[in-house]
Figure 1 (cartoon, rainbow, N blue to C red):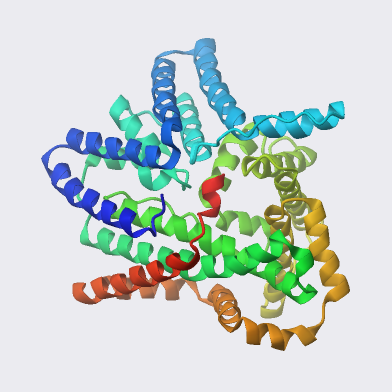
Figure 2: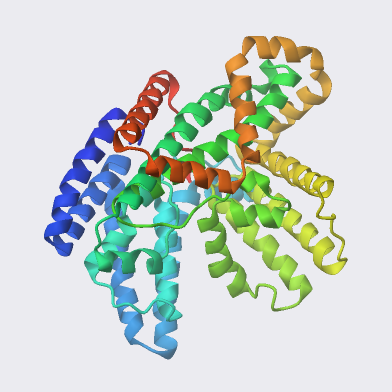
Amino acid sequence: MNYTDINIEVMLVAFLAIYTLVKRASRTAMMLYVVAFNLYFAYRLNGSVMWLLPATACFNYALTQEMALREGRTRKLLLATVVVADLAVLAYFKYATFILNDVIGLMLRTNFSLGSIVLPVGISFYTFQGISHAVDVYRRRFTMNTTLLEYFFYLTFFPLLLAGPITRAENLIPRLRRNRQASSRMVWSGLWLIMLGLVKKNMVSDYIGQFTTWVFDAPQTFSGFENMAALLGYPVQIYFDFSGYSDMSIGAAAILGFWLPDNFRFPYRALSLTDFWRRWHISLSTWFRDYLYIPLGGNRKGTLRMYANNFITMLVAGLWHGASWMFVIWGALHGFGLCVHKFFSRQLRITIPSTLWGNTLSWLITYVYVCFAWSFFRSQSLTQLGTMYNKITADFSWAYLSPFVYARPLWTVCLLGAMLTYLIPERTYTRLQLRFITLPWLAKFLLFIVCVQLAIEVAQEDVQPFIYGAF
């Protein structure tokens, strides 16, 4: 189930044509139509396991509706039931094998092995959406009396199902109530985002990912220079992959008449690790801030608690990505980095001057640290990663540069070109989008056809699944 598959694109065009007609006729009919398509989309993603999604929706809705009518201890108990039940289901599908095989096996020093459990695609994202809705109702931050059909629409909305972004009920349901047709600006902005996502995913991320996959899977068979190239390529690959999906998801929702918040804001231009997490996967980082970091006490319980809360939050964020010690280490590295940055900036009040050279140094330190952490995120084991770094330290030579560029000229140009986009000011990007919106419709249509055709050509060789679809 891939947005860049021509059959899926044709299906989505047919869906949109009927959606436009149904929406004009009745809001209820529109919701029924979209929910039916959402469940079909879930079935195409997960097969028979898709029953888990409507079951979760019914369970959460029933308890949340009851919670909205209660007070005191009963209200808290109902919220706890929703949160614990949702997390228990997520933990079973995502972490049961890891806990039994790795953790218990390590503690008991046995070779116990549990067969793998199929992870339903999108379960992490709709679970977090369900929890955020329940908590917001409990806090009375979201007070609309939502119907079961509206809740199904919110929890199963297909642009968000595969890999987010995680959307709050307060952002989606009020727009659903208004039931307005998408304005021409929304439609063309959505088309722009879909085109941008196709370019990012199919023409940048997938191409760079072919080489990085070869190296990360067998680092010992490549030179130190090639291992270094893969370490530099993966941060570009994951950013263009995930932000490309987010662009397509937000673009598809815009065409349907729903504005969703941005999920990425030029993260590799960040001047600190704190700044990076304000720009990277914004829907997830704000979710952890609002539903984990702040409930833990945030920065209200003293300096030491603030450091501990930061570290715990990032540790959980790492584990959220998957049942692997490498994700735990990745989260710990970011937690440690955030604590170090806050210690120097808040306690010692030592900051790098905000000058051209100072900002360049801040950017370089941040980017190198983020790339270093990504190497743990991508590697399957510490042994594999150790092999990569050993090859770099023992077999690195600039003499490999010329043969490498000669053997992989397009890969090199693609990587450098992608990294140069970090320098594009946000206002320039906004101008390009506005320029596209004001083009004649025929020019926009032709540009879209070109992007789709290029995406199809690349996909015929080696299309990669969305990285975050696995989380």
